[in-house]
Picture (cartoon, helix red, strand yellow):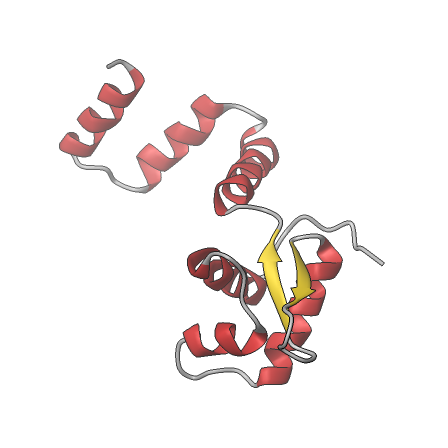
Length: 125
């Protein structure tokens, strides 16, 4: 049964980042190999993969000759997830206004004059 939850927890995002970086899919052991120390238990990774599958973020298949091993593949790209998340941030925190969102980040990040100039060049090439 698929969950209707389109957000990732911090750990789910870490697992997805590894899958996005590996490309072509990976089994739980591959993901564990790419994990930073301290590495979680294999069963922890397997549980997160199950949750990500239930949330609709990935799918899996079995490779011939690999026994019970599942190869997980992302159904959502990093760019798609980033776009969706930023749209939610814009809507939830800035009333849907790109202007208010950008203004917030310009003020809060204490951008240098050079960084502001670079942003202006992006807006008005």
